[in-house]
Image (cartoon, rainbow, N blue to C red; front, side, top):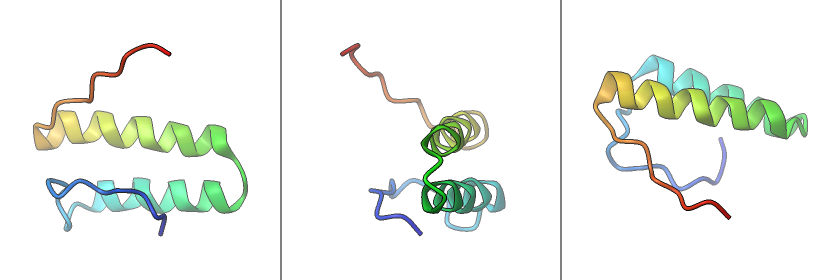
Length: 61
């Protein structure tokens, strides 16, 4: 998998979360950063909807 900093709140047994992580890892290995970003966004939305996590608020750069 990736060397990302995974949140301790991420459910280890959630198949959907695992599928998004795998898809991101595959995209990165293929140097498809657009698809990797899509996977991160979809995983974040899933975690907010299904696991009650609040998305991070980021300041515009």
